[in-house]
Image (cartoon, rainbow, N blue to C red; front, side, top):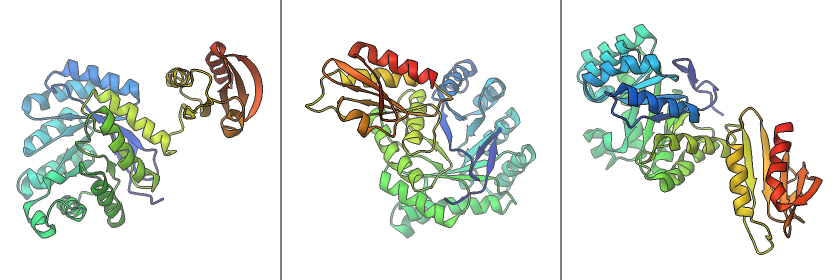
Length: 348
């Protein structure tokens, strides 16, 4: 796996072989610091490492003082068009700036933001979406192609490099999963800067999670990506649950219990769906244990098929088996299975 340049966002390392950091963005009115801090607290409790806040005006920039002071996790200011909002946010104590240097004005304004960031030791994330590609590039590449998005990102990188600034992270997002993946793979070849993965405008919880799992998960499985955000039209806390599930699915986060379960079939004689959901829900609150737990529907094949699991249960006709590494350790009624499994997990 390629080792990218490492940046530091308020103590959270991104790139350079560091664990993949999970990010989200508040959807409260940033000018309401109390409401924003309340949401940030819920995000942090769910497992968010870095949070981004929109800064649309000076009132929001001023509120960032209170937000940064009270936030339990590093805060990123999301800036568009007005470089003065970036300067005010930096003064307010943010830990990173997200902007496109090309849309905040001339070189003097870019230089002013860069100097302020350098003085505070803050990184800058260059964020390019398919909808933000410059007109000249759209014409040259016949649309917001992956090549056009990467070219745009590298142009913005050059603007920062010309100010002797190299503390950079890059995101290149599209609502199209194939286009997003192609863009990130191309950027991975062309640059050593850490990459912030995401599928923009992914949609509601269901489809947005599916698209993000396909795009973000596919890239992570290929060794591409240093930090991620799952974008959902929903409560941002759900973005964190989805992001951590994706990381666990591709083997990039082994904290907590990894629950696997078989699909139901005609041999199933217990409430496998209900049992699997209960086990997953109860295991979600357990951290610090790196275990694989299996919930299987067939008492005959279950222990054998799930022998790689640390612990597991398998159902029969109203009864079930509790097993460890494929070896049966106890037989019991169905209604006792989940409690017995949870007891073994806590003792493991």
